[in-house]
Length: 360
Image (cartoon, rainbow, N blue to C red; front, top):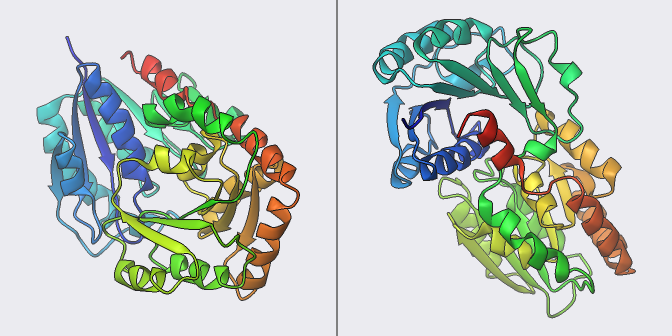
């Protein structure tokens, strides 16, 4: 009998796309094993509901409610009070009766989970913050350096904890391209620079990075690749700016070959979100710009390990970006050291490990 799995997660211009995308990675893998996956997502501006449907998964959309609780750090991300969100989800879960309910949302905690768990066999939480209580059978936190002790007082005694970047949910193509990616880094040169500031890039950081790059010592033959999501509000602005860059600059939107683009890149400039683990799996050195408080721990861990150089988004970005690129690339052995450090953080096998714990 195939597994039935329900996901409660959201994407929006405020939340970003990372939560839905990692759940989608898991759902795609489960579906390939014969599971039936269903998503429950609120209809925030910038949601990915139609994209999830295009991947073959059923989605129940929840209407946006403009009031919310305020007792959790990210309460506003839910688009409704927890009680009302639960009220909307219960009929869906009661009909589905899933074997697993997967909850990936910073605005939900044990109060929601204890009631929702009555309509599923087991409940899994995906979290990165370790800042609130959970009622679940399985918890995943794929943050590099995350210790299970961080959750011991936040989950029931019998909850199984999968912590650290070894459990990162990456699509299979990242592990498949890992040997190729590492091989081409044995004699590194900065010919391909990748920029990806998240699927939404609400603050138009990509434009600021492109502006800062004008004063950077990039080789004349360097090519710049920019990746943005289909819901990015500043997309047209970035596309126009790309045409004026001193180097060939290509903007890709809503791509499906991110692993190949990363494997073919020599240096990345990106945010400290879920794509950090994708870059690490492929040994891609990076300059990380922190965009939110919840990215600080990830960025700090990457910097301490020597996998990334971390910059803050402030008035010093322009000169610091130029200095950082010069230091990373000269001598080229710096790129090699960063690549090897990154590759030790994620090996690309996390998805299989999580699947095994779900019984798939």
